[in-house]
Amino acid sequence: MQYRFTEGAGVDPAEKARMIDAGTLQAFTAKVFEGLGMPAGDAATEAEVLVWANLRGIDSHGVQRVAAYSRAVDAGGMNPRPRIRVERETAATVLIEADYAFGPVVTVQAMERVIAKARTAGIGWGLIRNTSHQGAMAYYTQMAARAGLAGLAVVCSPPNMAPPGAKQAGTHNSPIAVSVPGLRRPPISLDMATSVAAGGKLDVARDKGVAIPEEWALDAEGRPTTDPGQSAFLRPAAGYKGYGLALIFECLSSLMVGNPLLSTTISGEGAPRPGTQNSFVAAIDIAAFTDVEAFKRDVDRLADAMNGLDTVEGAPPILVPGQPEEQVLAERTANGIPLPPGTVAKLRAAAERFGLDLPAALA
Image (cartoon, rainbow, N blue to C red; front, side, top):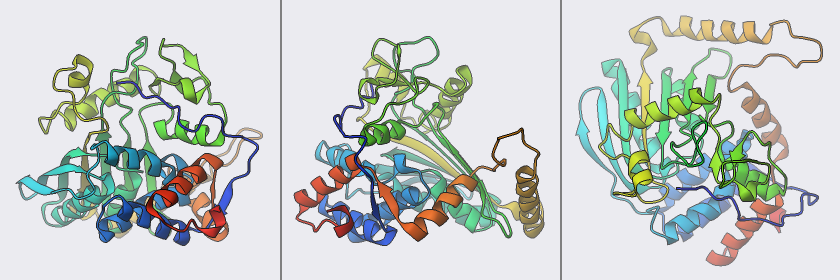
């Protein structure tokens, strides 16, 4: 399966972004999802996860996804009213059939379950089968961190990333997120794709009308491209390392739930619905191993040590994972979220489709 990034071509990169406050954007986005048929509570969850990403500068996983989600619902790939159900469960594990639910709706439920299991069993491990795009995975791992636990989340989907030397997609650019709590500092929170850049970053580049670095993607002939509209395959981070991680994540998610996504898509035999995802989320009870408060203090000390490292001339201070996003969060909470013209156009189209008033900041 090829990822084609073509929507939004012709956007004027000189056009300025529109600024909007998070509360207004979240309320509007929730109404869009209600228009797609989601119950109000689920629509609110979906909107919260997307705007959470925008607030932290993760615009690739923010409200620019609205148009793609709308198309997926129309095509039957995302289910606004799923029958989410637990199929297997032990004291420490759970398997959830998502029925092609919007990713945040089922993943929040799964993380809540594994957090509860970790409280009693020391660890909670949840597998989710047949979900759809889950947004920024750090949202879920930070749920665990806020509860005083360590959180882990990984997702797999049909292939969109070419292994080194291939001119065909072989793996998904499966992201992994890990969060651990601090005491006086926010969590250290890693959230990374196994590709050089997440696919959504190409969407954002298209919305801005700008080129991409040639390290990000390949065209249909396997050649590096700087045009997001010509991008067919993502490129793995660190070559075989990113490819290898993605392959193993498929084994620990899709194969573990008996729902292969990579091999079936490549062979064309029993290929999944476009956009299908399988994933796992986990929570680890720090108290099963050490004093929680001492752990949090050590996390703070570790972050302080990284921030205090000597740097070469002209280099910025060394930050820990999650710290850049926290800095953007403070700025955007105070000043609003900038939305590029292509994203504004997507929200305008959604407002017209569902008869909603477009927020004044975007009009």
